[in-house]
Image 1: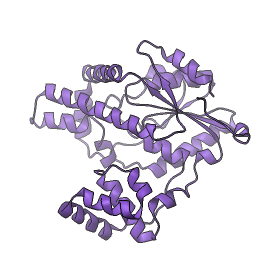
Image 2 (image 1 turned 120 degrees about the vertical axis):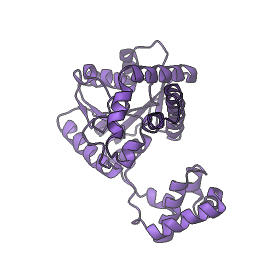
Image 3 (image 1 turned 90 degrees about the vertical axis):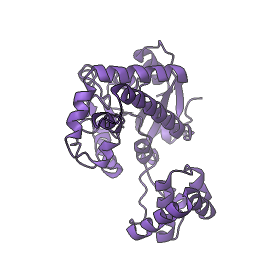
Length: 314
């Protein structure tokens, strides 16, 4: 079903988000969509923001960037931390400039958190309490993650229902917020204000047969290796990478190979496996958002055909 819009939302400026799992072809579709809308693409990818991580993050190539202007790609040194607050601030600045010029911003990426903090706003919780956080981690070590998860469920069932029992970082953050603020994190999150308050936001998520998607992932990883991934990662590992940049799939897997812990073939296998797992997590994240319009993609469908279908609902 198309997104339902009330009379007020029809008068608002539109913003389009194109999400989906890795390797499904978002970048190509986004360019075709932006061309149709005479607009530009804003990256919504937490890894493509870094310089020198071109192959490992599958950044759009020059052929795509020459067709449509892209923003927030390769603009941050890989030794610098980059957080959601900075991303939101920079993205909103670009949105305002594009809308002022009469354009519909087209966001493209699979980082669900980035989509969330833009559409729904950023959660401004209490300041971190390191001593309290360490205490919770000690409890988790002594009694297990489930002990803290059950505790969270008693004080904030809504938050617990959205957090995996093994996601100890988010469990502890929710407990920390409750203890320091006296309010459940789920209540405080409802006070957020994002783009959906002022704009007509359309979110589309690409999906396809799981076997086809996994085949595309395997082919992409093979292409990375043939395209110089080893050389790129070796250069990256010679630097002091930020914690965020270290999370790129391929860093840990190839680091083990370079240290002689396993063969290159094993590193290739691990990259494919971990990328498939990542794609599964991305889909799980987006499936929780009932505002998303799902776009099922056929294996042989061209990017311009997909963009044409999506444009019918913008």
